[in-house]
Image (cartoon, rainbow, N blue to C red; front, top):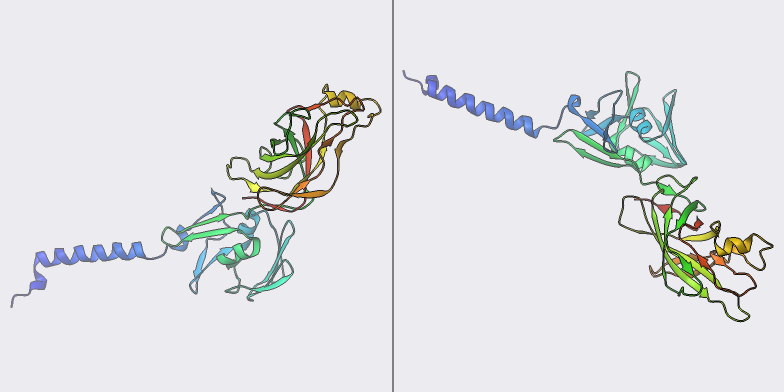
Length: 309
């Protein structure tokens, strides 16, 4: 009895169908543990243990990931403590309870140990340290980006004036530009551009000392064209050696005050508040106008924390 199943043509069709099915299933299935690639801030991150899928959740080695995010990690008797700056994290192996920055929270799955490596849910990385996590299950890639740095209130920013100012010609609202440079600046700010304006000016006149005051509105981080609102006060404007105000200041100051702190606020064109403080430069009793040349060092202090992009 003749059987179609025994024909060479059918066997060829069957083999082709099986091959297509296997290839399709291989494409649709998530990547295996051996193929996971972890990128931290755009760079490959070496792991002590490959990520593992368990119960529909992806687990990653806590120490490798947290240390890559500049967090110190300590393990003792089933409890893992991690510290990154002011952030603190505590988890326990086998428990879905955790303490983050002193607040109790819950993981979507309990950590476990493989060999000597503690594994935690990938999602917990973002919840604990504020990192951005993107997982592509088809490609097997895990992209982690560190949390945006927060520059705290009270931080001092050192900059130089890029816009020359003169009490004889300056006007309220005149744009002012500063470039962040110098030592002891908060991390990630060197090269940033600060924009502001003249908020008060008085030209020299009979019986009147000339003065000028600046306020700042926005800051554009290095390699960025998107400005961020900044709330800061001008602490000090240092006269450049050889300038008129520097020469006047060499004596008894003769009525000149540099960087006079007033501490008031003015509405900015961003709709918020800016620190219209400092930056007052009083000329001597000669009642002569003075200039503040470009390149003049200016120090500012943050009234509110600055969240970097």
